[in-house]
Image (cartoon, rainbow, N blue to C red; front, side, top):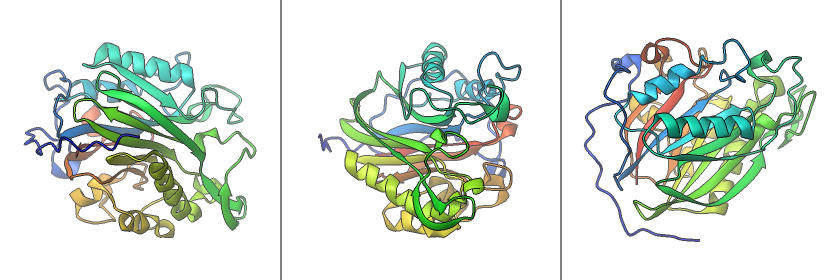
Length: 318
């Protein structure tokens, strides 16, 4: 395993920000994105893309609004963690589309190539019948090195919400959407190793928030297995920062929350909510040198809804 620390880039002065409504909207009609060539920072996005349905579904292009927004940003993503991607076929379509429409070339690693059925009667139902998670990255900047996968926890009696936390195995549906993946990438520009996790924790239906603390511990253990100079854990926690003390424990373990640092509190105002009236989607960073341009990408920036979840993004400094 590499442990390279040769370059510690100077924090770039960035003139254009990803913003929330609270600090003013940024038009998505800016000049086309350029590839990030700086060794000082990475451009990181996270989104639960449940509304990107199979192409046969009538409203399967709703998620296109986020792609259009990204195309108008100054820099294209270096890393893009996604949740509830359908399968390897949809991940391949995503990486191909990003490669075709943005500067850079993209590849990805998926938690489960062919997830089990969610039990829906239609592939278009409940946002998609197959769901799992993936890490997308610029293959023209990063070399893939290793991966680790694990399943999120829920109470042993997930219907009653009682008992100890344990892996949420298939219930009345596959629950492959709670199968997480983390990868270690070597950044050839910065000569650094970066570990990135895409997580999805169980919903309230399975009393998942009661095990949020166990789930952040397991995510941190995955980061430990992979190592790396910079560690990023991002995804759909299905738990607000107060649930089971998980956010506080993540902070104690060295993780920083760029959105919380932007809003000035663990419990941000509603302007930073990512799913209805909840902030449950996170981008957490360990061993990093701080952030620039952290933001929640609300629908006023994209010209309408693009998923039931709002994306979060930040420039993450080494």
